[in-house]
Length: 575
Image 1 (tube, rainbow, N blue to C red):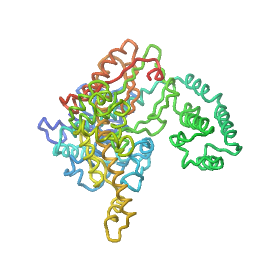
Image 2: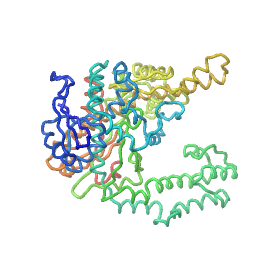
Image 3: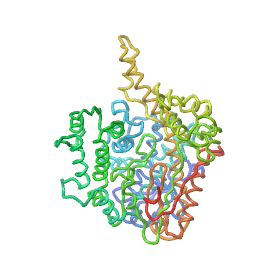
Image 4: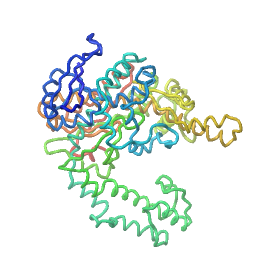
């Protein structure tokens, strides 16, 4: 059964709705109102019947329960599910998808920070080219979930799934997305164990003693002095890209940007200290002493994760840089006394997802061990490095240089896989949607993009108009090419984590934080904090759950999803 929670003036309204398979249709079965203060106890009592809790926003309801020591097994996050159903090709003909925008749509925008977090992917084409990219006030989401009627929304969502082209797939996606929302709240509640003393020691070893406010750390100041000597200039400000470019220009160094990849191509004595300075400046700014004081409380780092924060379904984070913990400070993630960290990551996940998504059995066979070595063994390329370059080119649309040279051979070796990403790219170039395995669909280009495409083929179009339109069409094609792979990888990861979460709960009795529990997730990597005596069992769970996620998404297709799992005392020991 499903139990819908609605905030009302008297407290909380609980509406019981039978499962569709029970013949009860969509009519409410029973309702009751309880005081808000009694919610945790009532949820704990009803949880014994294993209902699926339905609420507007997991982040608005679940933390309160967790704080009271109540964990729930399953839920439906209406806000996240609405986003998926509204945009999915699988449910495009549903009343929900075709209806005018309403209260459940008012917060359906991609969080601005998630776009910044994903700045190194292909999903940042400029706000003028895509729709729905302006973040709304942070309290808008909570207001929306409180003011909209969750019972009506749930009935509408269930009807959309029932009439979907692939109800099983889209239903699985909604369940996985909602499970991810539970996990995000639980990870914030449990927190990532963090040793402030170790962190401070790492900062001092890299940057020098903690400086006074507004003063550069000693190590950065020493590097700046080296830069001044190398440039023979006292007026050098490496913290300002424009001023730094002017200083480099005065020394005869013609750089077009201060990006590290470009600076590495330049031969000059200033480059080595400059690159080291930039690395330390990022550390001091993003994870320095101020970060430690702001984000680590009582030995725990508790960031706000944003499930579905990116267009592909990848997670974002609304603060603290949870998805960008640099290697220099990972040793500060220290297990509690008597506990261990199990750090697990999926090997070569996206290429394996492509093999399964396209049902390319030759690529699946190549992935029986190291996938890149398997590609070499297939005869497509000569070295492992070439295999990696070729696969990245196929998934991200690199058609020039080394990737372009290797693509014909890769296409001959794995025609089904390459045909799938090429088809997705062509759809994107036409401004069409593409979908993941379970049915999350890409957004369509915005009106500015369509105007540019139309101008290129209208009366009076110039060669410049045509070049611009083709360039933007190819850029959107690169987006859709990778969308199907990265988005399906996100679905696999959600399924993996959901399986791990369920199995961990069975390992031992006790409160949530007394059992093995997930404390970190980054796209294809997880960390479980576990009592030491259960570490080996946790390793088995994360590996078996990875295989289970593959079967859940792809059935009997012979694609392996191997996971590397290590038991460590601190995160820095994992890699």
